[in-house]
Length: 95
Image (cartoon, rainbow, N blue to C red; front, side, top):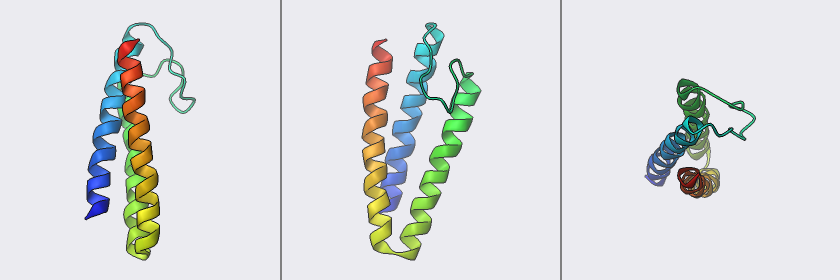
């Protein structure tokens, strides 16, 4: 149950982060994430970013299937990552 909530929160926060990234890229700014490159396309931001988030969520579900403790540990890490996405989104929209 908690893993589903964490997956939804991470998915939503990373989607908003993607929107904010596209927003500032359209203003001529440069992306600092080396995985995306300096000027990634909108498609790349969402496909590559989505694939990474999907893999992280998949690992969380897999680990939670193996061990509840491991599932909770990675869920906590992904909640922290969600907070990071929100903070970055706010920053990006201000640029």
